[in-house]
Image (tube, rainbow, N blue to C red):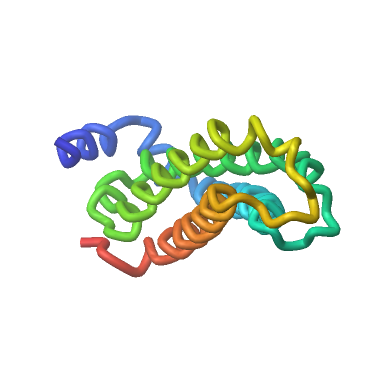
Length: 162
């Protein structure tokens, strides 16, 4: 099923345009890197503070970085989709890409856990007290998951390309 989808996607004019436009792929790479910097840069501060580090920072104040995280994710989602459309046969069989996609789903579920369990009560936390275990779990899961997403993304050109 994925193979037939990839084959049909590879035959689209958008796929051909992405592959054949000399300057497009490098520009997409740059935008993808900027998105990654916004995403991970913001999450590192937010997650480490939520896990109980950097207590001099205002816990709720660090969440003012979330719009940058969302912008970074949106940039990566758009450019990542264009990468896939541009070379679907290469990406669909790539183990680095497949692991990356699974981890992004896990990161999304972890973000839902944050919004359901932590966001409603974070304003009432004592800034000097240890954060609850669920907060540490969500924070470290986020940090680990997104770090491995980054590593898998970097491995895509080098592993499992058929």
